Image (cartoon, rainbow, N blue to C red; front, side):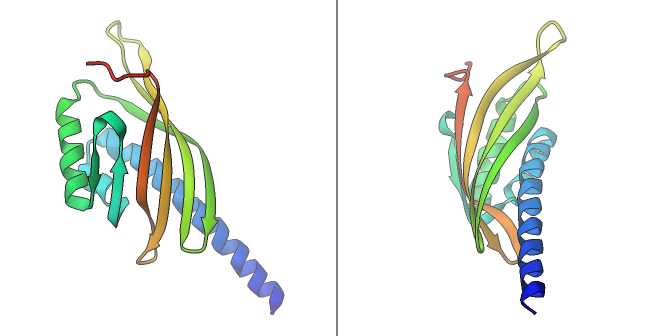
Length: 147
């Protein structure tokens, strides 16, 4: 019985890690698609996003409002690459850090790295699904957002 419990525990850990990784992939996918409702659904009921100069919001409606404004200010299509997740599980809570890169078309038609940074997250299992409780974004490159 102990072996079965150990296997079940290990399997649960792997499933949790994979679900959290998928949460990060969906984050970038929904941003790129401009689907602010799907984006906001990745956050817990009391979810909060703190994105430095871009803005901050807490709760589904406020996150939708913030990201709608961000979409309205965005003039070019961009692509988000979310990489290198480091996840620390602790029961129904977790912390993580992921790197993100924004790729966009340059004036000459090539692609350029527009921004690079990291997110520090607090995650929670809510109603059986992993969600972002608090996301703190940091822009590493460029040091300031272009006007």
